[in-house]
Length: 68
Image (cartoon, rainbow, N blue to C red):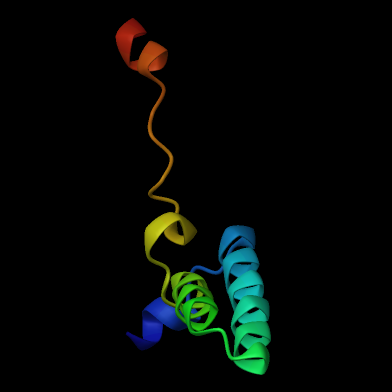
């Protein structure tokens, strides 16, 4: 778990973590429970590198597979 947090930081992870943290802080300040959950989820995607923040959302292009 420690390696997953400390290694492999790229721009996408930084953006997810930063935006999630901003959403989380704002939601805590305004006591919006859904915002706390959503901001926490987005920030954790960046911190723990899962979902789109780890780069698994990009699917290969169908045309490039067809040519091979």
